Length: 265
Image (cartoon, rainbow, N blue to C red; front, side, top):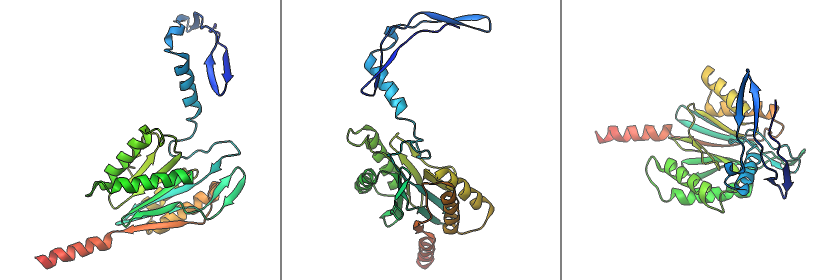
């Protein structure tokens, strides 16, 4: 089996194509497939090196489930959102790790933006606070039941396209009584097909545990969230059991609306 020869040179973290790519062919299943390699196949060496750099920078899971193997990176966290019986519960742990060291055990990663909107983040604190502020500004522009969805789409569009925002490293969960959405810098606005969503280094563990409890028990969503996060904390070394919980309970509002309708009749 013959192959083309190329020499990759690393200079200032950019991989450049140095030598020419030669014509070659290889034999597979008694058939010869020509490989036509020409420098003209690449529009420019800069574009090629940019593509390589993008591949190198895309090692993290878009939902933040995997963590970088470098020892100098801040690692956090696990955020879980559970929806059941007219109640939305968002719960996050408090651990922030730097390499093999826990630098803070009680960080607050779940916050209430509006009275009826809660959010949690995994990623750099400064980047997340920037996104919080931008989301608050965007929410002021919209109204109605679709306010959160429209605001999140607008935020992600800016996050993806604006020069100073595209380097923000964070993943967010935003929820109100109608939607639970996951936002990322990859341009994603994801609504789960189930009533559970999680992000962060221990997100996969928390989501699986919460989904199993949700489908097989009659527990309150807050208890489901705590039990699932306890499992994630026991499994993921970057997650602890110092939980911050925010809740939206709109069952009382629905009862009040029904009572008002009856009084009007």
